[in-house]
Image (cartoon, rainbow, N blue to C red; front, side, top):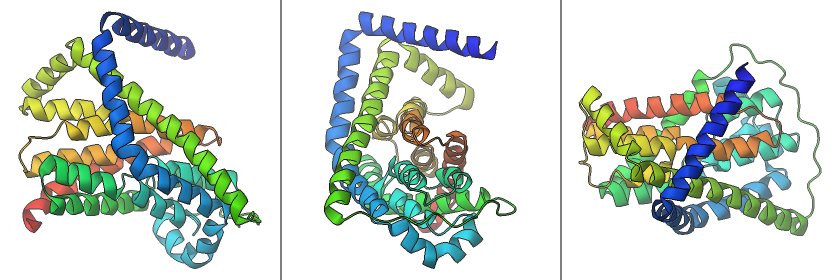
Length: 322
Protein backbone atom coordinates (compact mmCIF):
# COMPACT_ATOMS: atom_id res chain seq x y z
CA UNK A 1 0.00 0.00 0.00
CA UNK A 2 2.79 2.42 0.92
CA UNK A 3 4.62 1.64 -2.29
CA UNK A 4 1.54 2.33 -4.39
CA UNK A 5 0.90 5.63 -2.60
CA UNK A 6 4.48 6.74 -3.22
CA UNK A 7 4.11 5.79 -6.88
CA UNK A 8 0.91 7.81 -7.34
CA UNK A 9 2.39 10.82 -5.53
CA UNK A 10 5.48 10.69 -7.74
CA UNK A 11 3.35 10.45 -10.90
CA UNK A 12 1.13 13.33 -9.74
CA UNK A 13 4.12 15.58 -9.02
CA UNK A 14 5.74 14.70 -12.34
CA UNK A 15 2.46 15.47 -14.14
CA UNK A 16 2.20 18.85 -12.39
CA UNK A 17 5.77 19.66 -13.41
CA UNK A 18 5.05 18.62 -17.00
CA UNK A 19 1.98 20.86 -17.16
CA UNK A 20 3.98 23.72 -15.66
CA UNK A 21 6.65 23.32 -18.35
CA UNK A 22 3.98 23.42 -21.06
CA UNK A 23 2.14 26.50 -19.81
CA UNK A 24 5.09 28.46 -18.37
CA UNK A 25 7.90 27.99 -20.90
CA UNK A 26 9.41 31.44 -20.23
CA UNK A 27 9.63 30.79 -16.47
CA UNK A 28 11.22 27.38 -16.98
CA UNK A 29 13.72 28.78 -19.47
CA UNK A 30 14.59 31.60 -17.08
CA UNK A 31 15.09 29.14 -14.24
CA UNK A 32 17.31 26.98 -16.42
CA UNK A 33 19.42 30.00 -17.39
CA UNK A 34 19.76 31.00 -13.74
CA UNK A 35 20.83 27.46 -12.84
CA UNK A 36 23.37 27.29 -15.67
CA UNK A 37 24.81 30.66 -14.66
CA UNK A 38 25.13 29.40 -11.08
CA UNK A 39 26.92 26.29 -12.32
CA UNK A 40 29.29 28.10 -14.67
CA UNK A 41 29.96 31.06 -12.39
CA UNK A 42 30.29 29.42 -8.96
CA UNK A 43 29.81 25.65 -8.74
CA UNK A 44 32.15 24.33 -11.44
CA UNK A 45 35.03 26.82 -10.84
CA UNK A 46 34.97 26.30 -7.08
CA UNK A 47 34.12 22.59 -6.91
CA UNK A 48 35.65 20.82 -9.93
CA UNK A 49 39.35 21.25 -8.96
CA UNK A 50 38.59 20.01 -5.43
CA UNK A 51 36.67 17.03 -6.85
CA UNK A 52 39.68 16.03 -8.97
CA UNK A 53 42.06 16.35 -6.00
CA UNK A 54 39.64 14.44 -3.76
CA UNK A 55 39.49 11.49 -6.14
CA UNK A 56 43.26 11.66 -6.61
CA UNK A 57 43.83 11.49 -2.86
CA UNK A 58 41.61 8.42 -2.63
CA UNK A 59 43.34 6.74 -5.58
CA UNK A 60 46.77 7.35 -4.08
CA UNK A 61 45.76 5.96 -0.69
CA UNK A 62 45.78 9.15 1.39
CA UNK A 63 42.89 7.99 3.64
CA UNK A 64 44.91 4.97 4.72
CA UNK A 65 47.89 7.24 5.47
CA UNK A 66 45.77 9.64 7.54
CA UNK A 67 44.08 6.78 9.35
CA UNK A 68 47.34 5.88 11.07
CA UNK A 69 47.77 9.36 12.56
CA UNK A 70 44.20 10.58 13.03
CA UNK A 71 42.54 7.39 14.24
CA UNK A 72 42.74 8.13 18.02
CA UNK A 73 41.20 11.60 17.65
CA UNK A 74 38.52 10.58 15.11
CA UNK A 75 37.45 7.59 17.21
CA UNK A 76 37.33 9.67 20.35
CA UNK A 77 35.30 12.53 18.87
CA UNK A 78 33.19 10.91 16.16
CA UNK A 79 33.38 7.14 16.54
CA UNK A 80 34.98 6.57 13.13
CA UNK A 81 38.40 5.55 11.87
CA UNK A 82 41.14 8.01 11.00
CA UNK A 83 40.48 7.56 7.28
CA UNK A 84 37.32 9.61 7.72
CA UNK A 85 39.41 12.71 8.47
CA UNK A 86 40.23 13.01 4.77
CA UNK A 87 36.54 13.11 3.85
CA UNK A 88 35.82 15.73 6.50
CA UNK A 89 38.71 17.98 5.47
CA UNK A 90 37.82 17.74 1.78
CA UNK A 91 34.16 18.38 2.59
CA UNK A 92 34.76 21.63 4.46
CA UNK A 93 37.35 22.79 1.90
CA UNK A 94 35.65 21.90 -1.38
CA UNK A 95 31.93 22.35 -0.73
CA UNK A 96 28.79 20.40 -1.60
CA UNK A 97 28.68 17.54 -2.52
CA UNK A 98 32.40 16.80 -2.32
CA UNK A 99 32.11 15.30 1.15
CA UNK A 100 29.57 12.76 -0.07
CA UNK A 101 31.69 12.01 -3.14
CA UNK A 102 34.75 11.43 -0.96
CA UNK A 103 32.91 9.09 1.41
CA UNK A 104 31.46 7.11 -1.49
CA UNK A 105 34.89 6.76 -3.10
CA UNK A 106 36.54 5.69 0.15
CA UNK A 107 33.83 3.17 0.88
CA UNK A 108 34.05 1.68 -2.61
CA UNK A 109 37.85 1.39 -2.21
CA UNK A 110 37.49 -0.37 1.15
CA UNK A 111 38.97 2.46 3.24
CA UNK A 112 35.75 2.81 5.28
CA UNK A 113 33.32 0.38 6.88
CA UNK A 114 29.67 0.83 5.86
CA UNK A 115 28.50 1.92 9.32
CA UNK A 116 31.20 4.58 9.66
CA UNK A 117 30.72 5.74 6.05
CA UNK A 118 27.02 6.39 6.67
CA UNK A 119 27.87 8.11 9.97
CA UNK A 120 30.37 10.33 8.15
CA UNK A 121 27.69 11.40 5.69
CA UNK A 122 25.88 13.11 8.56
CA UNK A 123 28.55 15.75 9.06
CA UNK A 124 31.26 15.70 6.37
CA UNK A 125 29.23 16.95 3.37
CA UNK A 126 29.43 20.72 3.84
CA UNK A 127 29.51 24.05 2.06
CA UNK A 128 32.96 25.29 1.13
CA UNK A 129 34.69 28.58 2.00
CA UNK A 130 34.55 29.86 -1.59
CA UNK A 131 30.75 29.90 -1.60
CA UNK A 132 30.20 31.05 1.99
CA UNK A 133 32.78 33.86 1.99
CA UNK A 134 32.33 35.08 -1.59
CA UNK A 135 28.58 34.65 -2.06
CA UNK A 136 26.96 34.65 1.39
CA UNK A 137 29.42 37.05 3.01
CA UNK A 138 30.68 39.45 0.35
CA UNK A 139 27.88 39.44 -2.26
CA UNK A 140 24.81 39.06 -0.03
CA UNK A 141 25.76 40.87 3.19
CA UNK A 142 28.54 43.03 1.75
CA UNK A 143 31.22 41.90 4.19
CA UNK A 144 34.08 39.42 3.84
CA UNK A 145 34.37 39.47 7.64
CA UNK A 146 30.80 38.19 7.95
CA UNK A 147 31.65 35.54 5.36
CA UNK A 148 34.50 34.25 7.51
CA UNK A 149 32.21 34.36 10.56
CA UNK A 150 29.55 32.28 8.77
CA UNK A 151 32.19 29.81 7.59
CA UNK A 152 33.60 29.43 11.10
CA UNK A 153 30.12 28.76 12.46
CA UNK A 154 29.50 26.28 9.65
CA UNK A 155 32.63 24.27 10.49
CA UNK A 156 31.94 24.39 14.24
CA UNK A 157 28.36 23.18 13.74
CA UNK A 158 29.63 20.34 11.51
CA UNK A 159 32.01 19.22 14.27
CA UNK A 160 29.24 19.36 16.88
CA UNK A 161 26.93 17.40 14.57
CA UNK A 162 29.55 14.68 14.21
CA UNK A 163 30.00 14.50 17.97
CA UNK A 164 26.23 14.28 18.56
CA UNK A 165 25.93 11.51 15.97
CA UNK A 166 28.67 9.51 17.67
CA UNK A 167 27.47 6.02 18.71
CA UNK A 168 27.56 4.98 22.35
CA UNK A 169 29.92 2.15 21.52
CA UNK A 170 32.13 1.52 18.53
CA UNK A 171 31.05 -1.53 16.59
CA UNK A 172 32.46 -3.16 13.53
CA UNK A 173 35.62 -1.04 13.55
CA UNK A 174 37.91 -3.43 11.76
CA UNK A 175 40.97 -2.47 9.80
CA UNK A 176 40.35 -1.49 6.21
CA UNK A 177 41.66 -3.96 3.62
CA UNK A 178 45.05 -3.11 2.13
CA UNK A 179 44.89 -1.02 -0.99
CA UNK A 180 47.59 -0.78 -3.66
CA UNK A 181 47.56 2.67 -5.22
CA UNK A 182 48.02 2.90 -9.00
CA UNK A 183 50.70 5.06 -10.61
CA UNK A 184 50.17 8.83 -10.77
CA UNK A 185 49.15 9.05 -14.45
CA UNK A 186 46.48 6.36 -14.08
CA UNK A 187 45.20 7.89 -10.84
CA UNK A 188 45.06 11.39 -12.33
CA UNK A 189 43.19 10.50 -15.51
CA UNK A 190 40.71 8.38 -13.57
CA UNK A 191 40.17 11.20 -11.06
CA UNK A 192 39.44 13.75 -13.80
CA UNK A 193 36.93 11.39 -15.46
CA UNK A 194 35.05 10.74 -12.21
CA UNK A 195 35.10 14.41 -11.21
CA UNK A 196 33.68 15.38 -14.60
CA UNK A 197 30.89 12.82 -14.30
CA UNK A 198 30.13 14.10 -10.79
CA UNK A 199 29.95 17.72 -12.05
CA UNK A 200 27.43 16.75 -14.73
CA UNK A 201 25.23 15.14 -12.07
CA UNK A 202 25.56 18.09 -9.68
CA UNK A 203 24.81 20.70 -12.33
CA UNK A 204 21.86 18.68 -13.58
CA UNK A 205 20.23 18.81 -10.16
CA UNK A 206 21.01 22.52 -9.75
CA UNK A 207 19.39 23.38 -13.08
CA UNK A 208 16.34 21.20 -12.37
CA UNK A 209 15.68 22.77 -8.97
CA UNK A 210 16.26 26.25 -10.41
CA UNK A 211 13.58 25.50 -13.00
CA UNK A 212 11.30 24.21 -10.24
CA UNK A 213 11.71 27.45 -8.27
CA UNK A 214 10.97 29.44 -11.43
CA UNK A 215 7.78 27.46 -12.11
CA UNK A 216 6.55 27.80 -8.52
CA UNK A 217 7.19 31.53 -8.73
CA UNK A 218 5.43 31.93 -12.07
CA UNK A 219 2.35 29.99 -10.90
CA UNK A 220 2.07 32.06 -7.72
CA UNK A 221 2.65 29.07 -5.46
CA UNK A 222 5.85 30.49 -4.02
CA UNK A 223 4.20 33.85 -3.32
CA UNK A 224 1.23 32.19 -1.61
CA UNK A 225 3.44 30.06 0.62
CA UNK A 226 5.64 33.05 1.39
CA UNK A 227 2.62 35.10 2.46
CA UNK A 228 1.26 32.26 4.58
CA UNK A 229 4.55 31.82 6.43
CA UNK A 230 4.92 35.55 7.03
CA UNK A 231 1.39 35.83 8.42
CA UNK A 232 1.81 32.79 10.63
CA UNK A 233 5.22 33.65 12.10
CA UNK A 234 5.36 37.43 11.63
CA UNK A 235 8.45 37.37 9.41
CA UNK A 236 9.30 39.66 6.51
CA UNK A 237 8.14 38.50 3.07
CA UNK A 238 11.75 38.70 1.88
CA UNK A 239 12.86 36.48 4.78
CA UNK A 240 10.12 33.90 4.14
CA UNK A 241 10.83 33.77 0.42
CA UNK A 242 14.53 33.15 1.04
CA UNK A 243 13.64 30.37 3.47
CA UNK A 244 11.44 28.61 0.92
CA UNK A 245 13.78 28.95 -2.04
CA UNK A 246 16.80 28.00 0.08
CA UNK A 247 14.99 24.92 1.35
CA UNK A 248 14.80 23.79 -2.27
CA UNK A 249 18.07 25.09 -3.73
CA UNK A 250 20.96 26.58 -1.73
CA UNK A 251 22.44 28.90 -4.34
CA UNK A 252 19.10 30.44 -5.29
CA UNK A 253 18.01 30.78 -1.67
CA UNK A 254 21.25 32.38 -0.51
CA UNK A 255 21.34 34.80 -3.44
CA UNK A 256 17.69 35.78 -2.79
CA UNK A 257 18.75 37.10 0.65
CA UNK A 258 20.44 40.07 -1.03
CA UNK A 259 19.01 43.25 0.49
CA UNK A 260 18.18 41.79 3.91
CA UNK A 261 19.65 43.76 6.80
CA UNK A 262 22.70 42.39 8.59
CA UNK A 263 20.86 41.29 11.71
CA UNK A 264 21.16 38.14 13.86
CA UNK A 265 17.91 36.58 12.61
CA UNK A 266 18.83 37.08 8.94
CA UNK A 267 22.33 35.71 9.45
CA UNK A 268 20.85 32.78 11.38
CA UNK A 269 18.61 32.04 8.38
CA UNK A 270 21.63 32.12 6.09
CA UNK A 271 23.52 29.75 8.42
CA UNK A 272 20.56 27.37 8.50
CA UNK A 273 20.37 27.29 4.70
CA UNK A 274 24.14 26.69 4.43
CA UNK A 275 23.93 23.83 6.94
CA UNK A 276 20.78 22.27 5.47
CA UNK A 277 22.07 22.54 1.91
CA UNK A 278 18.70 22.45 0.15
CA UNK A 279 16.87 19.54 -1.44
CA UNK A 280 19.08 19.97 -4.50
CA UNK A 281 22.19 19.11 -2.46
CA UNK A 282 20.39 16.18 -0.85
CA UNK A 283 19.47 14.85 -4.30
CA UNK A 284 23.07 15.29 -5.47
CA UNK A 285 24.42 13.44 -2.45
CA UNK A 286 21.82 10.69 -2.75
CA UNK A 287 22.71 10.12 -6.40
CA UNK A 288 26.37 9.73 -5.45
CA UNK A 289 26.08 7.55 -2.35
CA UNK A 290 23.35 5.23 -3.61
CA UNK A 291 25.69 4.07 -6.36
CA UNK A 292 27.95 2.69 -3.64
CA UNK A 293 25.11 1.05 -1.71
CA UNK A 294 25.00 3.58 1.14
CA UNK A 295 21.80 4.90 2.74
CA UNK A 296 21.08 8.68 2.63
CA UNK A 297 19.04 8.65 5.86
CA UNK A 298 21.94 9.65 8.12
CA UNK A 299 22.93 12.38 5.67
CA UNK A 300 19.43 13.93 5.73
CA UNK A 301 19.20 13.87 9.52
CA UNK A 302 22.73 15.21 9.89
CA UNK A 303 22.12 18.15 7.55
CA UNK A 304 18.94 19.10 9.39
CA UNK A 305 20.82 19.00 12.70
CA UNK A 306 23.71 20.92 11.16
CA UNK A 307 21.38 23.64 9.93
CA UNK A 308 19.66 23.99 13.31
CA UNK A 309 22.93 24.18 15.24
CA UNK A 310 24.36 26.70 12.76
CA UNK A 311 21.32 28.97 13.15
CA UNK A 312 21.44 28.84 16.96
CA UNK A 313 25.19 29.52 17.17
CA UNK A 314 24.96 32.39 14.66
CA UNK A 315 22.02 34.06 16.39
CA UNK A 316 23.71 34.15 19.80
CA UNK A 317 27.34 34.60 18.69
CA UNK A 318 26.87 37.46 16.22
CA UNK A 319 26.00 40.14 18.85
CA UNK A 320 29.01 39.04 20.91
CA UNK A 321 31.51 39.29 18.06
CA UNK A 322 30.28 42.26 15.99
